[in-house]
Image 1: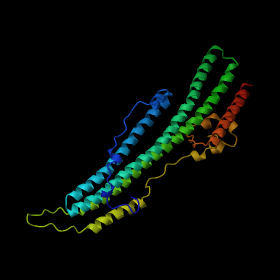
Image 2: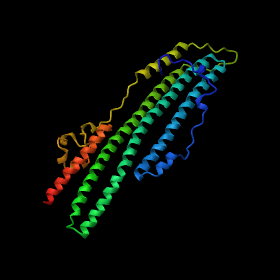
Image 3: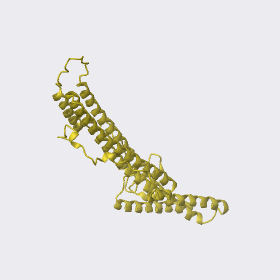
Image 4: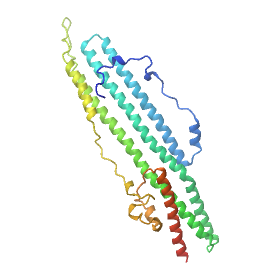
Length: 319
């Protein structure tokens, strides 16, 4: 709830309310066709990203509906002619409207998570040719070792295999780092939405508690509503609690900052040309940060340096 938010939702009625708009239908588009033409791993991610888009749209629709319902409950309370019901229902409408706003904020945060999934998809798509080339080279090496074990072409193929593996390691590092980032955003958004909606629901229960439901016998008059000030204070408390809300979850640790510009651990980036392949491809390899265009050029250059270093080692072993 933002400061100075209206304490009533009755003045927000509109004939052109966004809540009256129907949710978008799932249609076959050119984007769907592009997804069908992508490599298998990218295709799976494409389907996930598209499904998340539909889910985000559903949350946005739920937000609009919740805000509309808030206005309706307030209008109904006013129409009853009961001062206590009118006051409480109007303030319940304010809290329901804020719950709807939190749903919309959740949808926005999910869109940030979805954007990171797109980066993973693009990485997977761009590295697929290198993976296919690696598999092809590996097959050629096996065939050549079987038919012509002494062929000089083996050295050339093994050098090409090293370069292909280096490119794949770069993509793997990016994928791991981005996967952690994506679900860091997703889980944080779920927790924020849940905690804020719980907070608002607790204040709503305080409002409901103020409504006297004692039966009145015929001929008696129900006492006038005496809790208007308390009801207003509940909204003020809710606004204050939302403003002071802080994340209660622990941050997800990342080792990506320990990587050098060539996506290798900082402890061995002094001379990337002499690095052992096992160091780069180890299971504890840290994921890489999203690189800028300049960093991409540095990564490309360092990959080539790794390949040249491996070539020198291969040639020395042959000698």
